[in-house]
Length: 88
Image (cartoon, rainbow, N blue to C red; front, side):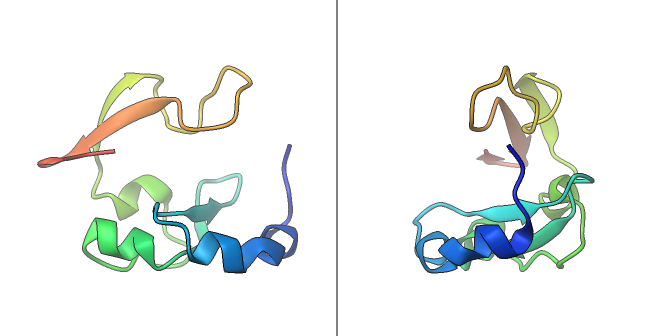
């Protein structure tokens, strides 16, 4: 199910304080919002409008899916990718 950015940001207080890095992306996987934890994990602040995977420095996709946004109908990340020494 897709939601508009204003709908998702109704929960901004919850999303902002999660210990995980959170990004809201559009259909083209462009970052529209992120919480403060994501830049801490990345080591830099991703630009709003930048492609999600570019924010991670063109990571190596480990799998099993080609993209973390490919799912089998379940909610959540479906793959793993590496950026240098970090794994997401």
